Image (cartoon, rainbow, N blue to C red; front, side, top):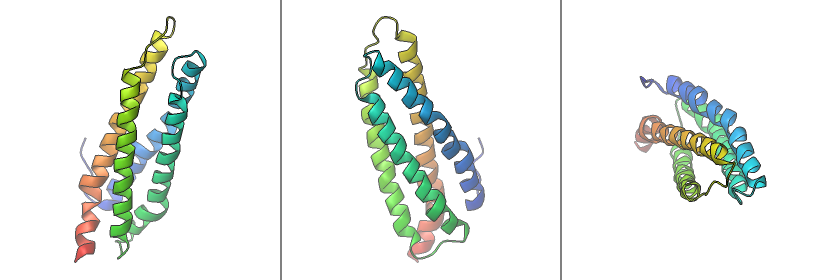
Length: 152
């Protein structure tokens, strides 16, 4: 994959490749976790995934409504503060993802649920891989386009 080099192109890529994908996939992941929970497999995992989905949705909303439009207009003096907030949230999302991955690794699949547990592990693995790439692209490529400029 070639990473776009301008902020507007990069923002569009993030929106289509990551934000839309997260919003499309998260409800199914939470639903699968709820189905498994009903079978006695994943106590509280579904609720915790749902909380993560809500936090991620709020984070993406803030980017879409505040940060990205500001970036598309060239930035301003407040942008460094917004970026710091987004980076702090990225760290929080990474911590939650690591904890959920740990719990998922410890999850035992009762007889008859093996394929569903495997599907949940695969879906969460893809989500977390995407989330890692998403955050790295913002933290390492997009945000530096504006942080360096706002400090001068």
